[in-house]
Length: 447
Image (cartoon, rainbow, N blue to C red; front, side):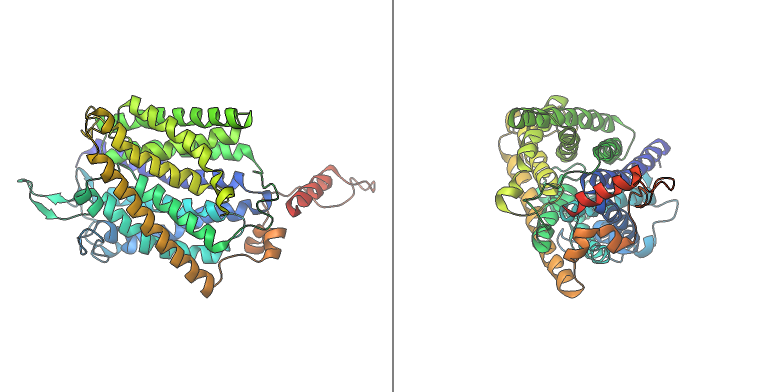
């Protein structure tokens, strides 16, 4: 065991956990004031459900002994982490429990990401049911495909086979462009189809109720993402340094790409655009941060920032109500970052692979494309089936009355903001300022 590597991965795990509350702020600020608590609770609920399932059987399904030709780990091999708690149980140079904890955070944030596609209209209990089913049937197997590498003996012989994308296809996905972002984005698209459009969409404007919350959430996500990417080096080493720098510059370039696109298209560069560009860049560099140079990272970030800024309007063209642009940012950004590895990968980077632009031909490019679209197809089909299962058994969508009035009150008996009641100010008989603010807010929510 290396204590420095262990300390870094433990720290990174905590950073990745912080991303889910950060996502709650990011998504919560983007919805209307009457549904912010429901939106945030969907992220918090994902933490609760997935955290328990991961320890019971999720880790085993993802990293247990392969039982399906690279498709699934043995689900109950480490039930309740049995056999992993001893001091001699290691994953590389860190304790197995530290690796379990680090990977648990990935599972949690992936499920939470999906919720943005169905903001403003999903019931909380059915969402938790879907989260548990989706994690079990979709995320845990895909994590095995992408993150479980073959175990080898000292002679290089495979003694513990892993997932097919990582070991047979040899697609590069350093920290989850496929398993996290394409996976969640495809599921978000499926659920947007299952639940249908929000009342009034797209005719009525449904603007973010708090851009400061959006920026706070984006900042927390960016901060935590250094643990997400650099922590995936599983050590305090040069690989972590390269991935850290690439994560920084790709995100900066993506923000610029998004803002320039807004400026040309709309005449203004917006705060929401800046925050969204940050997330798009983080998504894109996640699979690529070990395989490109900083120049390649800037190129991937800039290209993805432009693509995602354009992609968020696809929902209006095709008529699916992806409330908070999970498809436009995570699915498109994940596809972009994963496939562009085939163009910008450089043997100067730690992965030691050349893409098309560095003389490597199309070999890595087709591998990236197959891995990306395999995850997309699997996730979309299974998510669609699970979504309809929940819809037709317990009911997934809130009633129209609850959606129009306040899904926060109908699902949680709470409101995010209490401005006061419609009472007189100091007994004068005149309406108070707080009362006026409440009336305006409630009127805007009804619209």
